[in-house]
Image (cartoon, rainbow, N blue to C red; front, top):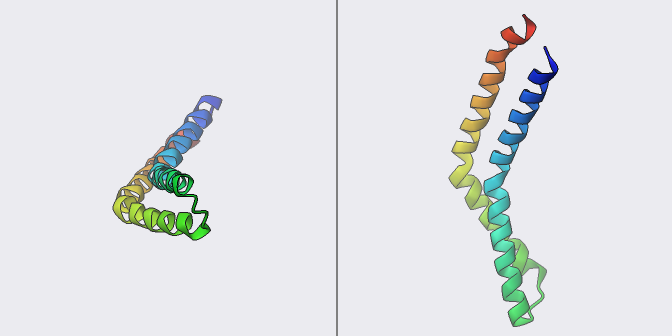
Length: 89
């Protein structure tokens, strides 16, 4: 196994991690920004006003994109296992 191979696998791992976290993080970011904007305009400073919508939004994002996320992770793992014979030889 060469340095290039290790770097390539690490790069693929980071790309897959970014892809898998993007739907949840973007959903949380959009909802958080919207709630913060609403709170600053109305002067309502309630913690649960920001927490509950984010929780619901992240849950919906997981339901919607969960199948795709699982399939992406399974494909990546399968590719890693397929690479094992070439890495050892």
